[in-house]
Amino acid sequence: MTVWDSLVGQHRPIAALRAAAEGQGMSHAYLFTGPPGSGRSNAAVAFAAALQCERPDERGCGECHECHTVLAGSHADVAVIRTQKLSIGVDEMRDLVRRSALAPVGRRWQIMIVEDADRLTERAWNALLKAIEEPADRTVWMLCAPTVEDVLPTVRSRCRLVTLTTPTTDDVAAFLVRADGADAAVASYAARASQGHIGRARALARDEATRNRRREVVALPARLVSLRACMEAATSLSEVAKQEAELVTGELDAREKSDLDAAYGVVERGRRPREYAPALRDLEKDQKTRAKRRHLDIVDRGLMDLVSVYRDAIAVATGAAGPLVNEEIRGDVELLARVSAPEANLRRIAAIFEAREQMLEFNVQPMLALESMMVALVAPEVRAG
Image (cartoon, rainbow, N blue to C red; front, side, top):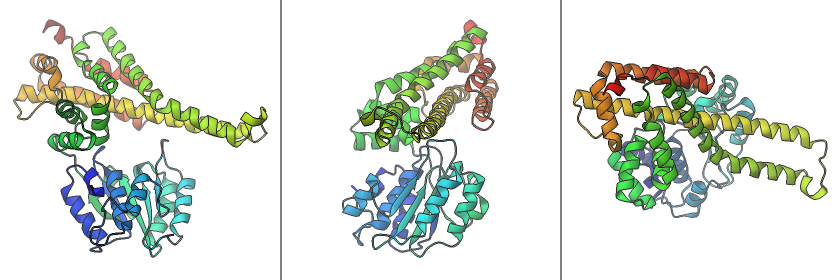
């Protein structure tokens, strides 16, 4: 199994990256773009493994020591910067730039991968720009962002663009069966429900609780028949997101706190040195920021699930070809299509995107944005239907 097998439905990008790994059109900087879940960071890591691969006849074999260590995240010459915060700051970027100036430990490349490059602050972009303009001889930068517009123009103009696309439902389902051994029916559901998001599809295929939480979200549109129902729906969506976020971050928070205590000798000595309090404050601040981002990410995913229901209703009303994303609630979808014109459902989709923008761009409290959105989605005509 090669490093390229994890990239689902990305035949053209794989061909271009294979050629570059073999020395055809190699560049010092790459920009990986594509919709959420298309595998931007996976593509960057796979390319990094191919560049470090020991086999010149098959770069990215997936079997040699170099490939294994890159994929495991332990290769000495491959640095991956990712953040659980809302942004990547200048200090983090300066550390990475300093490392990029060093010669690689091995014989091949020093590779710097920046996930979520769209989260870089303005000062972080400026710190990165000079390193991109004047790279070290054997340093390769790989930036990942949803679109080229998310990257500083002076940086993106110096990068070779690698554009990924949303994989098809069939490709995702086949990958889940092949890679994870998922049941064919579950894989089909997860592929449709994820709308091409590989990470989301794997979570849905593996975990019944994740599937149940999604079912709760997509059932909301048919229940929005009163102001009270809207308030309850907003609370439900926020609480579901909070519970899932706590499941993800709670264990990590506890482990980080335990590591901090051990580092400062709190466990052994039973007392806290003077330096412990500021370190604990910094840790708690970072954990709070991470929890906020995780909560927003999960709420955002729920909003996209709501969009899929109204998109299905429009498809049914207009007779569009193709399967529904939410085939398992076809009854609810057909009811929405019957009692609401496509234009009304388009307005509801616009209201969802407006709430999304308020939370992600303007820092509006999630509950306020969700309550306002749910009122805009209310469909009293469903009761009569």
